[in-house]
Length: 118
Image 1 (cartoon, helix red, strand yellow):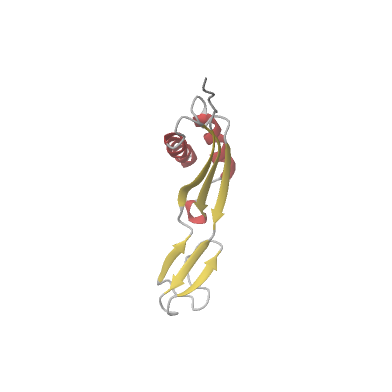
Image 2 (cartoon, one colour):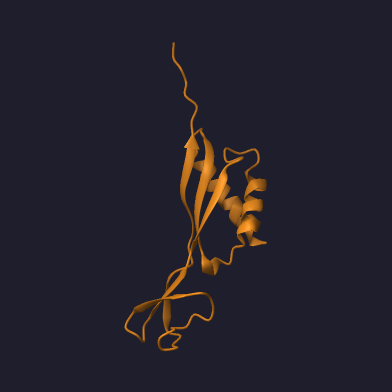
């Protein structure tokens, strides 16, 4: 279950950027080619986040679709639903993945306590 390793990385990144605050939401972009099971990642995230500044944070996943550029078609880009990574126009396999491999923490929502002076 690679979702546990991904969850650990996401919590580590979010905790490092919390700057003493509490993280209330973590927005993650996940490419379709990463083959992440959203429910498994959400479950693993909740477990790993316990006892950290990310505890009880909402995990928001954005799936990034597969887009390829076909060299045989002069760099024309095409969206795909999955494998094989072949050009739907010409059937060629000489393609470059433009998107769909992402795995990144895009943004965080933070909550900081206000302190009152004097």
